[in-house]
Structures are given as structure tokens and as C-alpha cells.
Length: 88
Image (tube, rainbow, N blue to C red; front, side, top):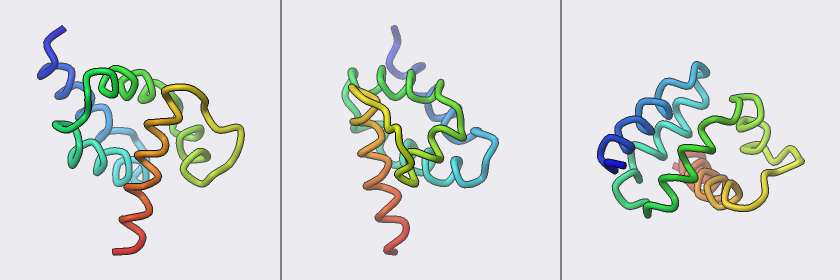
């Protein structure tokens, strides 16, 4: 798979979620970090983006059940990014 095409696809999906809050957090995180993510993280992020906006929104608010496995790594990165947004 061409990683550049994958990055573009992920960026589009992350910035066009349909909910403004998701666009800001997920889209902002992806826009800022897409080039530094590993191939494994890109693959996991692409699958993570298949989750529903309500689920992701709940997870970002800490509402259980939180995802497990690789999705948890992506969620932790998003939570760190979100916290940085809230403190700036």
C-alpha cells in the first residue's frame, strides 16, 4: 500500500467526521501528527476511524468501556492532544 495515499485518506476522514468537535480533535491531531506516525500506527488509526463518532466522543470524555489493544494507543494519543488543546 502506498503510505502517502493512506495518509491522505486518513487526513480526509479525520477532518470530515461530521461533528465539529470530532473534526477539531481528531482532525487537528491527524493534521499535526500524520507524518510522525509509524506504519503500524497509521494502520491502527485507519481502523480506529471506522468507529462511530458517538463512541469516539464517549472515549474522549472517558466514558467506559474504553477500547482495548491497539485502539487504546490511538485513544491515548488523542487524549494527550485534546488535553493540550484545552490547556492552551
